[in-house]
Length: 102
Image 1 (cartoon, rainbow, N blue to C red):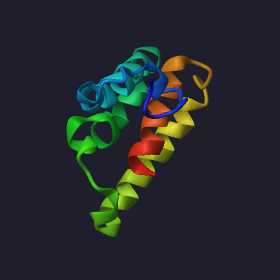
Image 2: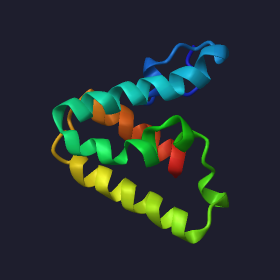
Image 3: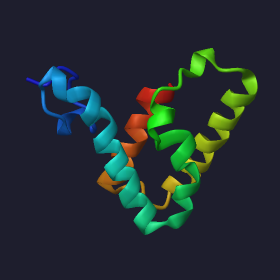
Image 4: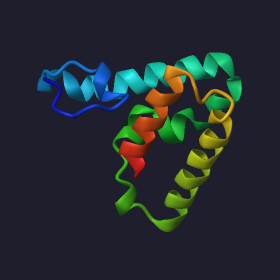
């Protein structure tokens, strides 16, 4: 039983709650790294969006200038993603961003 319902990302995760925190980072990160191999320009958004530090950032508690930098990185990522949108790696990374940064 999948406790997250049918989503592109969570359909790939084990249903064991103890595995979720690591898998919630690993699956989209793997997808992101696949995108970097296809297009090196994705690497520019690794640190602000797909790093372990970024995974712990609470967007709602950040000052406006940090939120603006996050928004710019998300916009850059989405613009690059249009070239690779039909790939499973793109769905994994995009769903992670939607859930992570709302």
